[in-house]
Structures are given as structure tokens and as C-alpha cells.
Length: 478
Picture 1 (tube, one colour):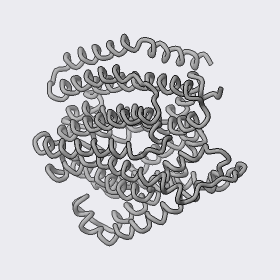
Picture 2 (cartoon, rainbow, N blue to C red):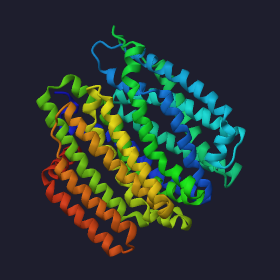
Picture 3 (cartoon, rainbow, N blue to C red):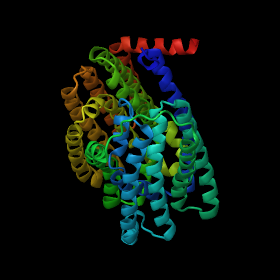
Picture 4 (cartoon, rainbow, N blue to C red):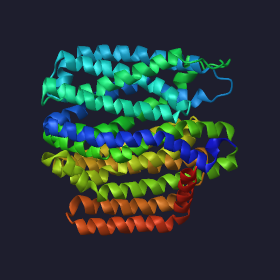
């Protein structure tokens, strides 16, 4: 049995990823207030549109080949260096073509996205997109090596550089949305350059004889374009709706609320970085019975932690919003429903591995289309009347739809037997809590409902809670 097969080893492995992102979380509480106090709400809203624009170019550029890299990394006798090259080269070719198209139409595109243009804005979009492609594959190489320490350290360095860039850019440009753009592009460029150099100079491992063909890689990865596109739409329709039906001020408040949910998004990103290689290795090497036990226990632990984390974030959101500054107070009502997005994304990251391993990407497409339909309908119905709160409600509910449908099809691929009844109970309680926290301004009611939900989880899943405490005690003793 490998170290990762043992509960204590698995949790310890996760913590090597999480400690860096926990520090990044703390640094984020410095970075976000820096931006919200430096930039007016309308300028801050434009930085969210920048991320939206870059993401759509990135999705088509990567072509799902990052998922192909994960899928084949642990294949028998694989030549991993050739695998990386075959995944990277097509992506770079596509990003070059898409960047040219963006440059040609940058005038009207930038006016819609930012309400302003400029050569430096065009350059930042193009450069940042190229960086994101390189970063995806070379950082993925670190993840697949299960090098949690390096993963964490890179994240910490990136966040420190981001804070330094914000301060430097502010002194040069003042209240200008480009401050946020430089804070995204410069740090990521530095850390990605380091990863590329590290990959080139480090000692090469023994080469295997098997390399998937371009056809195999693209055939496996191509369905993930639509999946990623749907996920992009789920994360971007809210901003696009606010841009169309509201103004940059409302968009800025919504963007600030999204940044506050970074507590759960940090956990989500950490878990995905850790879990994807572990799950693929487990499917390749484990037997079906032990796999079912392994995945069920992992799901139970993550579900408990996610629900408790969501309750804590909703309960203490007033304190966090206070740090952002007086212009962002209305973000308090937007945060609750946004918490549903990362927790259901984390739980789905466990259940969807059956689909990915079985190469049945069509089921992810079905789940994505259903969630996108719910998202578009919700934004059209709610954003004109509720603004950022309507977008938050739509986003949260859409991710619940995505999780429910995707998990249903996942069981059809490889039956694991997850505890969906408990998940349904927790989902109902969280939705009721989000409604109360968003529409009823009563701190006493917030506390009572939060404590009640936490109590239900601790009692209903007491065996899982005991297992979590046992794992933690064993790690502390070591």
C-alpha cells in the first residue's frame, strides 16, 4: 500500500499542498483590501472583465490537452517528457492564432470589456494568455509529481510578488484598472519562467517507450473544450449580465464579494491540485473494492469540511467585508450564495473522476449544458432586478445543478456509492441559510442558523468527524 493509500498519508499529502495556499489566503487578505481601497468600485469591476476575456482565449488554446496530460501521465511505460511536448505544442499554435484575432478586433472588444482601450491593455491580454498556457502545463508537471512543497512555495511567492506589483503600479498609475491587470500578469510571468527553467535543468527521469499520438491526445482532450467553455460561462455569465444590465460599480462590488469567497476557492484549488493525480493513479493501480472504499471516505471527509467552511464564511462575512472599505458594504448580501460555487465544485472534483477515467467526457458536457441553461435563465430573470445578488443566486444554484447531474452520470461510469442523501440534506440547509443571510439583516438569526447547521453536520456525520480528528491527531504527534 502506497503512502497516499493510507488516510494519514493522504491527509499529510494534502496538507503539503494546503499550507502554501493557507498562507496565500492570509496574503489575500492583504492584497484584496489593497486593491479595493486603491481602486474605485467601477475600476475594480474592470479587472474582473480582464480575467473573463483571458479565460475564453485560454480555454480554446489549451484544447483540453491538460486533461490528456493528467490522464496519460501514469500510463504504463509512458515517456512523460514527450507527452508534455505533444500537449504543449498544439496549445501554443492555437493561442498564437487566437491572439492575432484578438489584436485585430481589440478596439471594440476592449471598449465593451473595459470601457477603454490602449496598447498596454492589448499587450497585457496577449502576454497573460501565453503565460497562462505555459503555466498550466509546467505547473501541472509539479502537481503530477505530487510535489506539494514546491507547489505551495510557488503559490506563496506569486502572491508576495502580486502585492509588491500592486504597490508599485499604484504609485505609477493611481486609480486605474490596469493596476489589477499588472498585479495578475507580472507575478505569474515570474513564477512561470522559474518553472520552465526548472523543468529544463532538472535531472531527467528515465524515458519510457510509449507516447500517445497527437490524435489520441486531441481526441481525449477535445470534449473538455466544451466542458471548460461551459464552466467559463458559469463563472462569466454573471459578470457579463452585470455588465449588460447594470454598471461597473455593481460589477466591482460583485467582484469584491467573489474575492472574499477566496477562502473556499483556496481550498478548492488546493484540493484539485492534490486530488487529480491521486485519483488517476488510484484508478490505474487499485482494485475496484478498495477504490470504492477510498473514494467514499474521501468524499465524506471533503463534504463535511466544505459544509462547515461555508457556514463559517457566511457567519463571519461581516468582519471580512469591513476590511474592504465602506464602498463595498453591500457585498455582505452577495457572499452567501457565492459560497455554494466552490463547495459543490470541490465535491464534484471527487465524483467526476469516474467520468474522466472512463473517457466519457460527453457526460460532463450534458451536466455543463444543463448548468449553463440554468445560469443564463437565472441571470436574465434576476440580475435586472437584484443586481449582484441575483447573479450570486444564479451562480450558486447553477453549480448545484452541475454537481447533481454530473454525479448521476458518474455513477453510471463507475459505481462508487457516495453518500448523496446526506449531501441532499446539507444542500437544503445551506440554501435556507443563504436565503436568510442574503435577505434578512439579523445577526442573531445568522448565528442561530449557522450553529444549527454545524450541529446537524457534526451529529449526522459523527463517524467522519471522528476520522478527521483522528487523522489530525496522528499528524500532530508525528
